[in-house]
Amino acid sequence: MAIGIDLLLFIVSCLVLVFSGVLLVKTLTVLSLALRLSGFVVSFVLMAISTSLPELFVGVTAAMQKNSALSLGTVIGSNIANLTLVGGMMIIFARGFKSDKDSRKGSWFMLLLAALPMVLMFIGNELSRIDGIILLVVFAGYMIFLLSRKRDHHFKDKVGAPKALLAMLVFIASLFLLYYSAKFAVKYASSMAFDLMLPPIIIGLFFIALGTSLPELVFGTIAARQRKPDLALGNLIGSVIANSLLILGVTAVIYPITANFFLYLTSAVFMMAIIFLFVVFLNTDRELSWREGMALVIFYVLFLIIELNIPRFLT
Image (cartoon, rainbow, N blue to C red; front, side, top):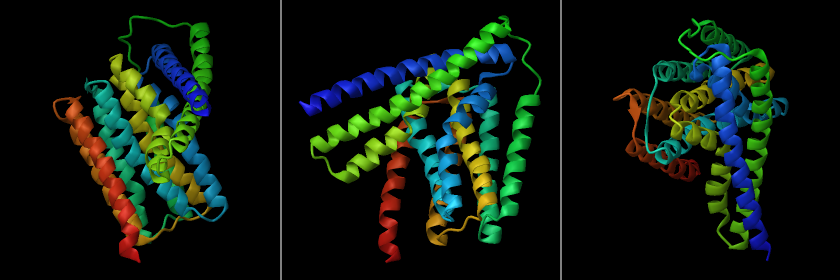
């Protein structure tokens, strides 16, 4: 009986999740028209930063507890999951899609900006408060660069202030729906897995890991299937940049970030390799194929295997 209720609530949560994802794609499209900015920029500024808030809260909390290494691990893990698990499944579900010019340019910035905290970490063996300020200044500079770029005057449709305001309100409401429906979907899926006596590690690695990425996955998949790759890729690329600069910057300013060198080196090298691979996929033939999506998901599985086995070499 209990598993039947969990299944019903899980289905309802998934339906709300998809509905909110559709609303987000529609409202961001309207907002891009109203602001005369590309979908990539609007998705980066609104969606990517919004979906990075949980990592920001983790970073601030960890820093206040003088455990800022937790934030570093969260950022690296989140970046890898976004570009492999989320990006790969998004590409597979959308059966591949073309990449737009803004996204291809943004991907090269992502590669450079994600490398900055890694370079600073290697130079000083930590991310100091000065390093944190540098990351925040670079993030602010990149945001100004995006928002100050020449407006696209090729939009034929004009959106008035009332419609734009309504779109913003619907965007905020849809974002809340997306977060909470994802949270309940994970809760009831985990409950069903427990009732079916699945191993805890399976629940953690699959249900929880996928569940924390559901907002990005649903939004990106819907945007890609509706042939709006600028929205899908703006969210992915923006999340990686926001994680690497904004979140690590705020965390380091509150409390310097230090970490186990071997664990950090392994994760950081893997993350940069994944980012480079994603950039190559994105810029090759100006599209992302379902085969490349499969390759990204396989790399995520490989990352999990490596990370789970590293502690054995350290003992």
